[in-house]
Length: 157
Image (cartoon, rainbow, N blue to C red):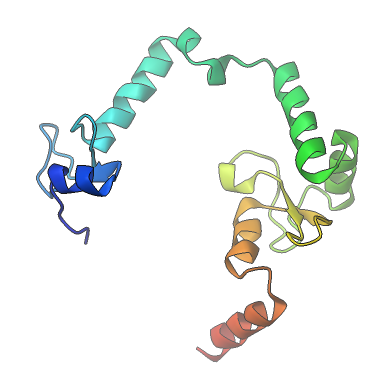
């Protein structure tokens, strides 16, 4: 259960959201935006409708396929020193599957988009994983001993 906090206290703490537990006029009991007092569920719904009704106002939805590829090429080179072709070759070598959970990295769902897994100390690229597995490794601080401990814990439960 979320802890109730008033808007004034949220502003004092510098929080972007606050929770009162009181439903909005549409019946949502979600977080509210500190700045505008809007219910977060209603605000998200309004933004989605605005993007749907006026796609030209959102650059994100109007980027051409060529621009997306160009940005991906730039991002891979800058962050990991990888060429887009190398990235695609790595994906092909693993049959477009995550190296840990073997789910398809087709990009149909956000958590199944291909993520470059790399060593944060050396910067060396280790492979391509799905978002969930890459995030999981990060949450275990890329530590094999912590992951082994977690596996032992799961197997003993």
